[in-house]
Image 1: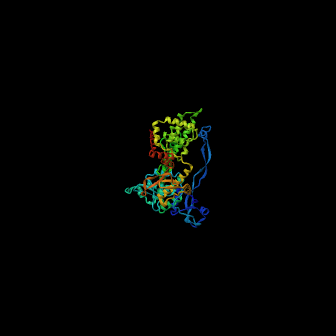
Image 2: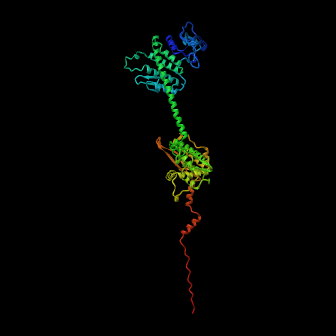
Image 3: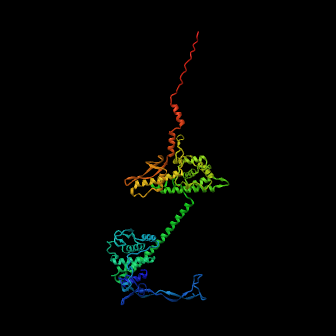
Length: 570
């Protein structure tokens, strides 16, 4: 249908007045050249106006390009020059409707609905909603109607799910109804009441067509047939009477839309400036003080709905690590570190708890390094650090000796009370008499076993929660690894060769789902070493057993010797 000429509104009106039932029209030669059809003998053409500009010469005052003022002759009179101009003119031409032709069949001659996208659709929609005299709502409309204006409720309804082109055109059509035909039923004397529905529809669609043409939205395929259908039984005088109404309403809407577009652009530019200023301020002075230190794993955070907090804390940890490295590098010169300045620089961006968390994690990963003092290792050992992703925030880009000095200064600057509160929130210091053995660091083999057990537990829990609908399956690698190392899951304990290895700490959701509490991903606690120590404490050595047995026996006394009585003979 793109081969049909896009006629102006005036020509559309001329066509509708001469042949109301017309659908698609084209010139005599256009039908032959573009559509392989010919005009039937005896058919009368539809008269329209075609542009016919012509060249003419005229005398005009000569303008000085430098001063933009008329050039004067010696007598002070303006100098004139002859120029050639194009003068607008029109001529009457004939066009013919498809019903007046015969030949090759046209593909899909009727247009049921407009298709295509609209440039700056969101802005266009927002501008139309704001200039509408009544509220606009998107809703599902039953039947073939694309939209309607409700006279009683004073609102416009637009069918949802249409193309952008059809939606914009329909909204303009209904706004025209609201502006031109918004009379209440009890205003019987209103002049608008004298217009029938045919006239109202012609006016509304004509306004929509004119406004859409202004913004480059081609709707003639749809609007032409729509206007022709509603104006088929109208007199020429009636159609001419609506022309001024259509022109003034379309001009008013175009002016309002242009103003709204400018307002939206200015508003967007202002918002962009505010956002840019905020981003610049954020980049120049980042602040992580309000982000809490998150000490749980990602699985737990996901299940309890705290994944955003987990991610924010992880990013803050990495940023803190980079800030510490930068502060040490910038404040180290002539073999001396300005520790106080370096620490204060970091504390301006991060909380004491965050800095302590990152430093403790760094020391815990370098317990083998003698450049960290023993007291700093003991200090770091009292702080709980989640092992997951802990490698990502190890201070590693500066010398460990400088990091050790940084830690010393940090502990000196941190008030004793604040340090006690942070450590209390991490790991309470145990009573020396009841102090437990240092935390066991898993070997690579034990880590593989732990991962295989967690993989199997997740599959079992998913099946227990969702039954046959569960899609979580344990990998074949996990099954082989557990069989190879003789690992079994017995209740809440993971055993190896019958000996306890991990304790399973199960967790459940706080709220019921489908009448029951869903089990969440558990945590595993290594207990093999603890059990061995308990067994060692319970079973004394052979030497201790012999000593205990000796003490338990009653004391044996040696038998008394009999006195010798020497009898002298007299």
